[in-house]
Image (cartoon, rainbow, N blue to C red; front, side, top):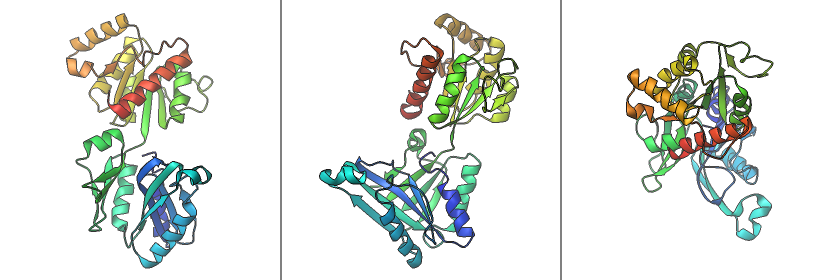
Length: 322
């Protein structure tokens, strides 16, 4: 959902306030376009705008088109391209080209559809916004598009007639164990777009002094995870080495849809962990979900390097599913 930021929410607020609102969405790119498919720009009827579809190089033109589209109550599909010679000057590197769908709220994008989308996002419910450009129909789809949801990838279906915008909940990282690696991993994860939670019932570890400004949950891991909730947009990383803390979290995580589960420890420690979990009734397929020892094999040595290896593996699993 990072490409959308708060665009649907802001557009709905402007519409309901009587200001008028238009959503402009990148629906296709070629070359080195500066924003990914799904990036959005919001334009109010009075010209205020938020968000971006190109990093600034075509926003002015889009605002003019959006204002006219709002007045006429019509959908517009815009295309901007730049030759290689001129590309660098305006920000579309290497002759990048983008197509942008302009949708006035109320006349083109039904307010009730936008409202349902905002409600789904607030409830952390994955949903696809489907637009048939030929017929003009728009709807929310909760089933199907499994690969698009897994890859967090919006785009065209049906030979370019149907655009599917994937709205996934924000990424979350739950770290069990307020250790040195966590001190590096938590801020790195936030930069990468995760909303981090730090779980540790040991007050000496999970303190504000060690983790200033971070969200610290001082409960036992099973209680904390039940409270936080673990869904398909959640990564779970266990860093304590202590079965009393790690295992209860694994019991929750392995029964959840968490996209990534990683556990710190040597190969011998991990083998012992798998034996305990197997004796607790978990299947081989469930145990295969655990990345242990945690992180890509980068030869990492310091806590910061280990944090980089963990975040890299999380990214690989998120984007490639392996």
